[in-house]
Image 1 (cartoon, rainbow, N blue to C red):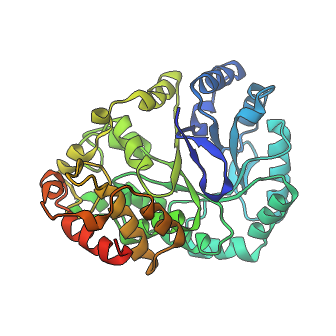
Image 2 (cartoon, helix red, strand yellow):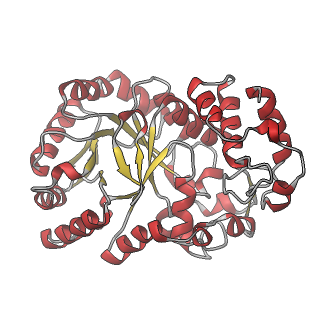
Image 3 (spheres, rainbow, N blue to C red):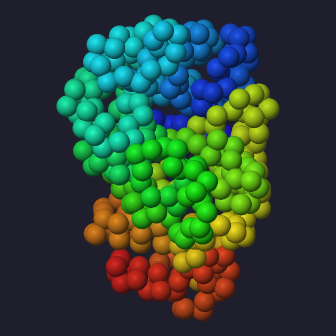
Length: 381
């Protein structure tokens, strides 16, 4: 299992994480069996958005004696009322729900306290005005949570939250279909069939700006809906061509700032399949050819950081240089961290001889030679 640093939190999280769907409607014994598999495979990051007390209790018992081995991403504002889930912005309910969460999990803290499901700008304003963000910061100061997170499907809301400088972790829906959709306050628009009736071209610029802003500001991203609820694994899905689970995982893990993908594994078989990503070959991970063949979607001219441009005769990591260039363009300047990372590259963009070998191999017709020229001009090497 490979581990990544979750942004500025410093937490080391497994690339493959566990969404809580697999724990729902499972016995305590079945939950323990899943946690056993996670521990043996090195999966250490668990998202727990559901407030279901049975799920929390079963997970808490399964973590006894090994709690320190796991990074828990629990949700603030997700409570259980009258036998069902409720998202709340009522501070009394929020406080009560958080305290109950810790009690049921049998822990005194969460590594990530995630402000739950903020998809509308007016809801984000509510989070600010009602003191929910302030409460999360209080919990962080008290050590009850180690970092403040926010979950959203809307890049506009997410950017607003990230730009406050108070959000350490963003849980966001990342996959190659949703990334082409513009911001919406209605999450169902992401998979609505009508939105895929006409061909879609290139990533939504606001989503790209979100990922690059998170990378620049040290906000770690944990991914939800990497498989689009399973739709991307079917030819009947929005892309019109099935992807493999490994390709979906690799796409998410190659986006800027992404640290871990929360796989909604609903069975031991699903969980093993996601863990198998770690042993998958580069050919199995490669999504470029599949993307290029999608009948409803085009990424022409957009670098997907897939690495097909390699090898460069001059040894330049063309994909990495392009990623650094895009980060600077999004910022309008050269952030210090990007400058340092670029300086650490063994071969710089200025060494490009414009042979065009990278462009001939690119499935997305990216103007790589021009990108190298611009990067050399920007970075001075």
